[in-house]
Length: 277
Ligand SMILES: [Zn+2]
Image (tube, rainbow, N blue to C red; front, side):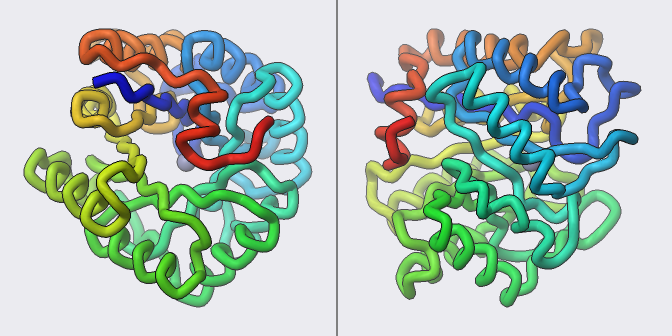
């Protein structure tokens, strides 16, 4: 297998705190430094959330702008992906950063349960976020928490609400949502190939100790991999991850194991059909 593997690093997320792991970057300065280390270790996409001065998740466009500018300056070429996830704001505030024209943004196309609440993605908000992504030339990454989300992405692509072939990420292991199940994973891969073509790129993320499981499944199956402290703060049961870069290195080792080169940012942009940096 020679197709390069894109490693995405989800640096911060909405939930982890310094109490969970002191290496979780919270301030923009910490986020830029942590992203730079992860970039040097092999990540070519930075999936980003921002926090307020108390560390709470927000969707403040100014803070996103500062983070995006810092990554572009310190990690030239790296793909910046901003989160429009529902933990950081409500309604259209979730898309208030899209006019910054990041390379990519996450897009959830359906609702499901999260550990303690409903992850609400009502159809009108999904359509509005998708239309803003078209208006500002932002490539969506479809967060598939359920099989139906892959079909919804296909429908949105077919009727023009998503412009290019959807790039789907399978998210497994969120409590109360899709568990980590190999047969479902294989069916997800099969479904993406059936709906979007056998060479359509896809990626996968696992939560907590399942991060490494999903990394291995994706890398050995020709997909792309997401790692980072947003999804998992530990190296193993006994050790906290010392950095985002340490989690990226773990994914790089799996790429070596399965004879997949790690995608450079140039290769990642080509695979995803993104504009040159
Ligand atoms: Zn996220």
